[in-house]
Image (cartoon, rainbow, N blue to C red):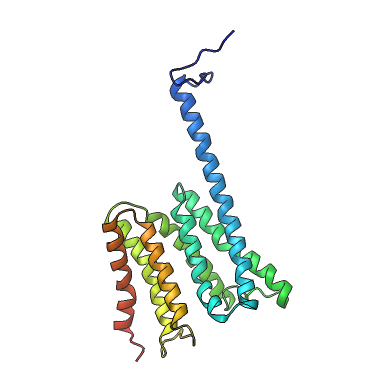
Length: 229
């Protein structure tokens, strides 16, 4: 006996209502597979970033570490949050992107220097916790930055603007977070990465322009309100 096929050429799923039900099931299955791959990728990338952070700290020039830590982790959170299929999955992926590097870097630091829970982030336990929360928040904000319209443009611009302001704080002598040697090329690399990330978050030329202009507002406001000179 041959099976009865629907107009699409697929055999209908029993109890699924025929054509629409079968296609809906296939699409649902594909969506679940994409979600699963995305979550695994967030965790795997977090581990890789954590391992690279340890390698950079111990073997690479100081400027590489200054660029990667913490900006690489923030941009990772923006990627996994901005590509998630829903707010819940964005939260989970962002959490993995925040915690996986910590686990990997603590394990790597144990190999090179002995156990040090404060190694990742380069500060106290409080600073590390604040960094974790900030990275997690960046992932959620990146998901919000996918919204159409000015709200999405401003959100994307705010994400980039905060990182640009932090980089300016490290580059300018006299500011609180000044890091000798951060200017010029580490600051330039961070700026290019942030600008590219903001542009990729928006889908239109006008949206990118608005997002980039709003990103410049944050460091400009910091310079005007708290000049380093």
